[in-house]
Structure formats: C-alpha cells, structure tokens
Image (tube, rainbow, N blue to C red; front, top):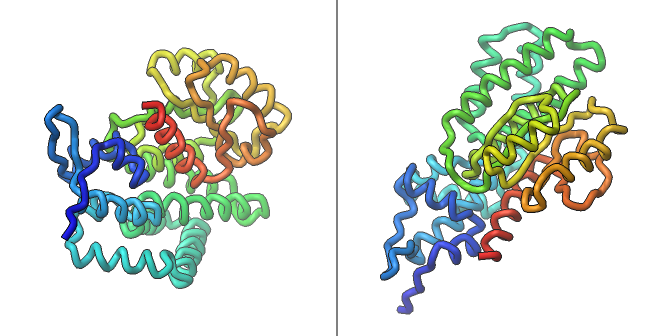
Amino acid sequence: MTTLPSMNISAVERDTGLGKDTLRVWERRYGFPQPTRDDNGERVYPAEQVDRLRQMKRLIDQGHRPGRLVAASDEEFEQLCSVATSGGRSEAAATGEASLIARMIALLKANDVPALRQALNQAMMRMGLQRFVIDVVAPLNDAVGEAWMTGEFQVFEEHLYSEQIKSLLHQAIANLPTGGAPRVLLTTPPDEQHVLGLLMVEALLGLDGATCISLGTQTPLVDIQLATAAHAADIVAVSLSAAFSGRQVRPLLSQLRAMLPASVELWVGGAGAQRMPAQDGIVPLPTLQAALDALESWRRSRANDN
C-alpha cells in the first residue's frame, strides 16, 4: 500500500484553499490540524489531515462552523460530507429559510422584540454564522427594506430590526479568533450611514481567519488613509448602500484609491458596488460571496509571491 506524502503549509494552502493563517488559528483554537515538524522546524501535515481539511473547506463553504466540524465524530463528519456531495442545500432547506424570514417579518410587524431576538439567535446557532449571514440576514435585509418602501413598516420598525441584527453580529464577531492575515480595514465614506453591510462582511472575513479593523461609518478619506498606515492594513473595504449617491461613487473611489499605497487593495461592497463602473485598482464586491472569493484570491496571490 502506497503511503501518501506529507505536505508543508504552502502546499496545504494551495491544495485545500485554506489560508496559512487560518490553519495556524485552527491549530491554536481547536487543536486541529496537528502538524509535525521537519528538520527545519517547519509544519508538515500528514496526508489524512490534508484530506480532512479539504473536506472541511467544502462544508464551511456551505455554512458549517469549523469548531463544530472539528468536534464531530468520524461518523458525523462522514454523514455531513455525504449530504454535501449529494447536492448541498436541499429545496426543503431553502423553503425553510424563506419560512423563517417570513416569520421574522411577522414578529417585527407585531413588535415582539423578545421573540424576534430569540428566533435570530436560534437561527444563527443552528445554521452557523456564514450561512446565517448569507442565507438569512441578506434576504431579510431586502425584505425589511421592501416593507419599509411600500409602507408596511414604519421607520421605527426598520430601526428596531437594524438594532437587533447589529447587536447579534457584534456579539458573533467578538467571539471570533483574531490575528490572521490579511489585515482588513472596514468603513464607509462620509454620507454613508448604513452599517449592516459592513458588519456582515466583517463577520464573514473574521470567520475565515482575517483580522478586521472596523472604523464604523462615515470616516473622512484622510482618516481612512491614516488608519490604513497606522494599522498596516493589507486591504481597505468600503461599503456603499443603494442610498449612496451614484454620482459620487466614481470620484470618491478614485480619490481614495490615489490616497492609498499601491500594495493595499481597495474593495467596494454593498448595493452601491453594483452600480460602480470598472476602475483599475478597485475590487468590486457585488455579493457577500464575492467578498469570500476576493479573500481567497488575495491569499493565493500572496502564496504565489512566496
């Protein structure tokens, strides 16, 4: 029987799509993977661990939490992999999420804050943070926005919803491990007050091992420039909502791009990014999945450089 060779950390990163910093964070936080060391003291990963990491990456992309996957028994893990291979999220799961969103809208209309908070918390714990943000918070934001525009919701109800989501995401972000690469500075420019998109991206990037430094909303461009240098940021991520003036997007981003070092990537997400014309040196993030794809691209480019 042929024994498969072990891999160094760079090879594992290329093979699995998991960044080096993510692997190190998991090793410290969860006790897995458990690499050995070569004669130079560098991490070396056995083939069976690499295979499990590869499977974990597929499951995490579908919304499972790393901690839960590490703690799963071999039987539970194989069952999760079997479900993922047979088609991932089922039609029943998608229907269940739609029903959950409808229930939350009903709770908002009834001004039942305790029940709403409980439903949100239970959904996040059951689904995992990534899937909760992408499959529940994002469509729920749209549903609440539509209800407000059609007059079904009063302004205070929209604010009530925003505060519940902000509180929940702040709590989830505070519990994420920190210290991994890249270092991402998150903010919105002046005149952009919407913070939910920023928090959603921060949750997803932090969950994937990035170090996120949030400045909140409405940061002057010169302060974004100063903060980028002070925190040695690799990436500046700016969120623009649909309410942001379309006429301001191009000149504002051009000015900010010119103020940042060429080595620092500029990402622009939110509904406003969907109206953004193509500009050199700017990475558009029209969807939440695009943010995860951009993170993976950044890590791969740095791995290739090394």
